[in-house]
Image (cartoon, rainbow, N blue to C red; front, top):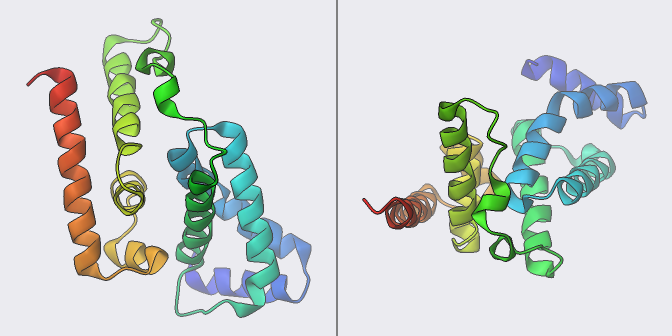
Length: 182
């Protein structure tokens, strides 16, 4: 959706048009869920976080600053809710599950199995990162947001982002080397 169409939907939604807000939700719910799931690794919690994010978006839509993309603002809301969730202690610890619990069923082709195994390991290793490193890694490397967007979402300078991303990638690399003994 282009910026102009999105701004029109935002204006209509702030005037109370439910259909306009529904279109915004439908456009951005995939992004919101993807971010939430990458932080929580739990479908139910991710759905709750996304629902809360859209409630927050709805109640604060009149404060929207059109200098920022809605995608960036929503990403910030979702990320903050995820970080609150992780701090709250409601989180199920991945370390309680073995990596094999995350493995796909063997009916998939070998390449797909290897890809899924690698994804599971990367997600597991990401959970071992500091909060900032994890947030930067998820938003930049897994969600592939632009550096400027990640800086806006996390209220971080580009230098701070690059430093956290460097150390996150380094820890992920070290973890992969330990697992694969290379």
